[in-house]
Amino acid sequence: MKLTYITISLFFCYLESTQAGNHLGITNLYCHNTAMTWRNAKAFCEGRNQILIMPKTVRDIELVVAKCKGRRSWTGGKLYHEFLGEPYLYPDGHEIERTSDLWYKAEGNPSHIHDGVEEDCVEVVYGKLNDRPCEDGLGLSTFPACQDIRV
Image 1 (cartoon, one colour):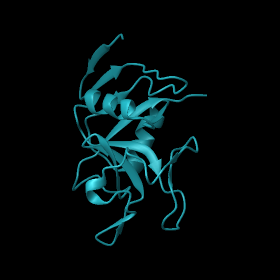
Image 2: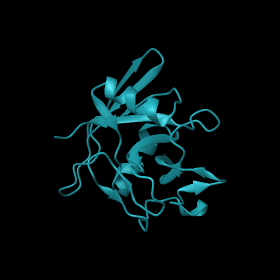
Image 3: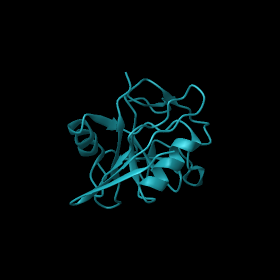
């Protein structure tokens, strides 16, 4: 597996591809080191002609944790509706199953609500998926993690 490391002023970039069967994995993973809200992270990735990561396997999450130095990393996962109990979706329409082992179960994830606040976006933390408020980027630091768009 080839790994290229490039340092550019305030951020770092890792390029890597993964493949597992017919799942293409995350390609050209880019980890930024400035925390921001989900909406700003999404716009940041789009400005790079990329999208927020869509980890769908344990291997994808391991890659994100390794390359983003264990930082909390925003994914493209989001609640695209206003009904509790509905699934989180990635922009490609992939549903993140509520029963998936990818979720960080210690907090009862996915819960959709924590301390009365809607958790409408998904991040990678502790090597698992975690739901949290999209606009929370200050108190708990979450960073953009971008990947190439697959057509």
